[in-house]
Image 1 (cartoon, rainbow, N blue to C red):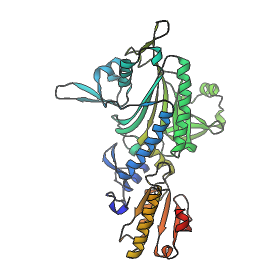
Image 2: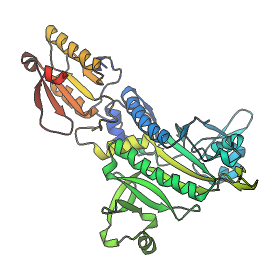
Image 3: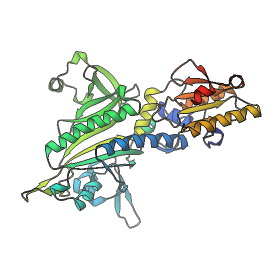
Image 4: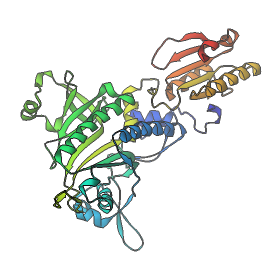
Length: 411
């Protein structure tokens, strides 16, 4: 893409009411646009990042047998009354139409997915099943001051698994732990993300969160780096430490952001809707469930918070909107044509290139914009490098550049 044709522009300042690093940088760099507190639109660069994160997650879900669906955002009030959450969930958006009919604006989808499964599965032969979606969610968030880390409208992958036995559920649950670790590794924050033991609430002794260490985090966790696990502050006591074989003196306290979680739901949602199966002997049993969530918008915000420096965003190559930022410092028409030709040749090789072909923009401004936008690799073409038929290459994470020939670059 030619940067001159990109309708978004970089900004020197973020909105005055933004306090989080992720929102400030993503708005300034033209990745997102703020509509109101906790609500953002994704612009061309931001949408490219979002789609790459989507694809990583989608492949991992498909690899464990997940079937992708897309459920409705409007959810019947009756379903929420069956589970008891219509009155107990404080952040639920309730919407009324002109006939005074009330519906929920989906913050999660247990109340939809369980009735769907009940319509299609009733025999032990129909299970296990795992379905997932990637979809906008809505929650009445009163603390929407963390950019895309905590929104009123946000994008989430939610998977739900359905099992006929505790053993089958546990096998799948353990598999999902590894899947989540793989996802966070692939998006570039695996080395700073820990599987964290948290309260299981009414469902089980523990649930498992995946927490990324960063000073911007709202959570406090205690990390055992040798075992590569952590405990959330809410379950930090001597009994839990003993049950997990952890020693208090070895734990490191850190702030962190929760980027994913997995839960054992048991029969909490299958029972109200009578989601059950008939076994080989003709006996009826209630289905066991698990749920597995990752907030994509929160994940993107976490990458920015965790990896950015004082110059701007640093995108891991796997989710960067483009692999290469081709920055032209040429003003002579003949030189510009040569850079145009290099751009086209790189595209033909399948490279993803953002080409800063803007005329009348000073080199310092182009470099500052390039640092802010945060592509992994920058190719700089100037009259001097063109005279030597070479390119200056600089990694976003490195301070030193190197010069190589254009022929070597294309090979």
